[in-house]
Length: 480
Ligand SMILES: NC(=O)c1ccc[n+]([C@@H]2O[C@H](COP(=O)([O-])OP(=O)(O)OC[C@H]3O[C@@H](n4cnc5c(N)ncnc54)[C@H](O)[C@@H]3O)[C@@H](O)[C@H]2O)c1
Ligand SMILES: Nc1ncnc2c1ncn2CC[C@H](O)C(=O)O
Image (cartoon, rainbow, N blue to C red; front, top):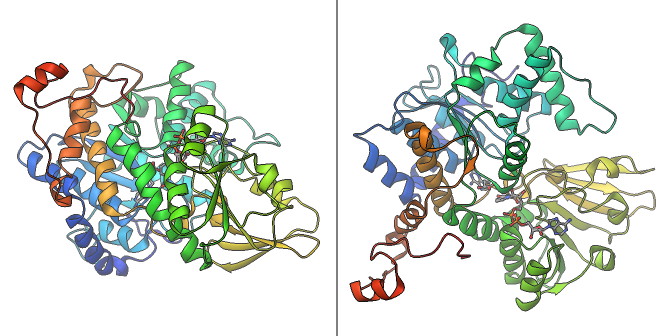
């Protein structure tokens, strides 16, 4: 790749100084990660671990990476989205304690604005360790690194990579081409690599969905920890993180006044709840679409109109998909939207909005306003504004969630990496969650920073509730 120095694939190493300044600010806002460094500095629980990381290469992720290395791990990193990298963070991690001329940090293969071919090339690099070493852990967000390993093993055993079909999504079409080249070059013994991997820790809802399907179909090659369903991840990052970063993306992308407008949020799960609150907080009249009667009822009792998309597509001003599903907004529905309606997605993948169908409409014309902001003009002259080409707009048009909420998510990632690397036998093939006492510990690590005064249970109260004085305080089935 033309942008790639021999060991480091970042956009511009000279941005490292700026990145380091923002990483230093972020560390102060990430008490959970900094506590991990303090608590485990002597023990070095990740010594010997070789972690292949595929997660948005942001300032917050830089603090995660440098926490993993502080605990003894060796790391190689790529982003899990072509638009989400913050180039100054990538440069700072790559330079590390070295210099721009002699970077000595973590090999990073990520830059904002990757092509799909570059994206899968970067993902190959985090699995291609020097000196014949193999990765022993994967840290994934959305499951693309895990998918590449599983497909590479499958095609190695089959002796060929299948051809794409007419309806193969572009992302997977490029993956097939990448694997065809990789297997032809015989650079990697994928079966040995999969056997070397002790397990994967998965960040997000959609990645967990993929893992559950692989486990159900008996295809999982190594155990997984579902980090997303730690309460201190999904009930914080997914909700409060999106509450913060959704409007950041809309504002930076369009500068349109949200107040007074009609905004549609598709999906009222953890992410949709944060999005709806965010838009209502700006004075928008928020309408929810949902398929699940329970979430639809929640939305209604939270005071939102709940409607079918077709009923509102002609008069709403802003549309946000937050479902983890596919084809939520069709090209035909976009063709019925108001002039300059804003359309964006905050779900993990770009299949929530039918961008391919939009591009196939007769007479459609795409105009770049600025990177990650495009107008799509229909034959009759009306246009819509699409953010980040249908990819997650909070990281494509803005900088994603703030450090404090990512500290909760990433402290779970560090604990999950330690659990899976040091206690592998406790995690048989399948998809697991962290025990509740660790979830509560993550919350405890973030209370002081907010001045929280936590009430202590007396022994009598604990006996009455039937819980230990120090917790866990809730049964596994409890829904926070
Ligand atoms: N951009 C980010 O920073 C960020 C952060 C966390 C999660 N995510 C991603 O956001 C997506 C949603 O995550 P979540 O944790 O809220 O999942 P969730 O399962 O809690 O919520 C999704 C909701 O969408 C609903 N839904 C599904 N298909 C629908 C459809 N066709 N129309 C309307 N509603 C539909 C479901 O019933 C569910 O209530 C996932 O892809 C996840 O990986 C993104
Ligand atoms: N600031 C961020 N850094 C890294 N990843 C981020 C950031 N904001 C949102 N994300 C997406 C990860 C999130 O936990 C998810 O579940 O997708």
